[in-house]
Structures are given as C-alpha cells and as structure tokens.
Image (cartoon, rainbow, N blue to C red; front, top):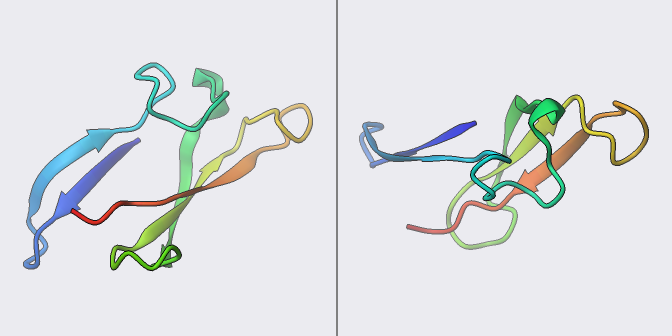
Length: 78
C-alpha cells in the first residue's frame, strides 16, 4: 500500500510504501494478507491534528484462517 502525503492544495509532496516486505507494516503481516485491500478515513483518532486510517487485510489469519482484519494506522503529524 502506498500512502501519499499531500500539501494544503492537495498536491502529493511525498509517499511512503507500507509493506510486509519492507518491514514497516503491522507486526505479523504477510504478503498474502492483502494489506490495503480496503481503506477508510477515520478522522483524527489520536488527536495529533492528522487524519488516521482503517486499513483492511482480507487474507489475514489472526482471527482464524483467512478471516481478515482491519488495522488502525495512525498517521503522524508532518
């Protein structure tokens, strides 16, 4: 999954790849978990002034074989 960082005009200023292969994804995530299969904005969950995300992983086995999971990804203020 790629996270695009935008400026106040909506133009992309940089990006970050979140991936099990890059080891910056949630702990225990595997390639076949399909992290990023669904994404939704949650608003500012942690109160840092930056919106946070719910990210789906439809093949995640944490709750049972291919039960899927949703991860809350806190996006730090830039």
